Image (cartoon, rainbow, N blue to C red; front, side, top):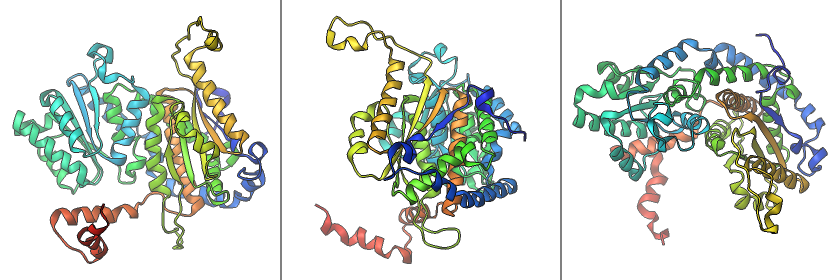
Amino acid sequence: MQSRNPLQTDNKAIKLDYSGMMSEFIGSHKGITPEEIDELVSTAKAAVEKIDEKRDSGEYGFYLLPYDSATTDEVLHLSETYQRTFDDFVVLGIGGSALGAKTLFQSLCSPIHNLLPLEERNGVPRIHFLDNIDPVTMKFLLNYVNPRKTLFNLITKSGKTVETISQFLIVRKIIEDKLGKQSASEHLVITTGDKSSSLYKFAQKNNCPLLDIPENVGGRYSVLSPVGLFPAAIAGIDIRELLAGARLMDDRTRTGNLRQNPAYMSGALHYLADTRKGLNIAVMMPYSDALYQVVYWFRQLWAESLGKKMMVSGKMVNSGQTPVAALGVTDQHSQLQLYTEGPFDKMITFLKVENHGNNIEIPESPEDEYSYLSGHGIEELINIEMESTRIALTEVGRSTMSLVLPEISAFTVGQLLFLLEVQTVFTAGLYDINPLDQPGVEASKQYIKNMLSGEKSADMTVSRKILNTGREYII
């Protein structure tokens, strides 16, 4: 693939500004020196070689998703079949099976999409996400939607996720009771990966549309697979532009030169901040409501990929930064005090949007006290607030960096999500840990099944003690 410099040829490329991480600007206490970056070059080279190897072998399958035109065509065809048939579209999924689609919807659709009349939604349905099993939320939503006019998209790679299968069983019964057993194929689209699962067999038997999750793509890396693309297409998002943005970022992140690769440089700075500067909390703070859900998608990506007990070599390491969500401007009035004067254990990544595409002029005020606002607009104000916060943090030696989007569009969001995925696997290489597994989650899953089925296992001794005899510690 021929490389190019999109900063010169494409004014829609996002940029990384990491000056606020460097000792030149925030001092030597927590600032990173150019020499420390240079010292990382050999480790980074090994990480890059591992990425190239796993990309070429297909193990890092998310790299291939922006180029899968056949799946894009399949998703678009299916979405066009259903898009204007239903009033409501409900995603049933949890974790990586919902966060990506929810991120695309919040980033790229109107913030009041579900409140708009049909014609102002361009004929597409209202979009809902049942990404938790809170019984109150489920009850209200399932009572609200009309099953006859609702399409449900069930997403689970394994076909066995207990929360999602519970939702499936409930929704299937609603459909069968109200519309007849033969109606499942008309109201259920199944997105899954395990062809041996009972869910897959149900879909085949009942002629439900099936979308495949590639075996080599884990849930938290699946946003550019049918997991994210089908709900996005139903919502009217231009998924071809989304994938084009991802391809642009793939092009930019193929170089092994840290200072030319925004994903690798960001990963290297996170790694150095954690391992050398003690900054083990990674705050992401978008100055845009539309990008706030990106933080929650990234939170899973960063936490599950990097929070590991063991290195690949077998050495115990207990690695990983704790990702924290913040929203500008809102959290200037709730968290900024801690970030400015609290413990030196955080680095902050701002998500800045240069052109929000909307502006509201602030009218002139007869009160002299407010005259400084006259002649300005809300778009200008939000960006000034972000820059002012960044400067204030820099002046007290706090570590910050900025990912700058020229605008919010499918093209720029595709770049951003792909950058963060590449940043994650590269950082995992620096830690020498596996970014694809999540062994710390499996014990909880097994305990859930044991408790539901009434089974007992030897490794639940401590758990049973807490459940049965820990009541004396309850006030």
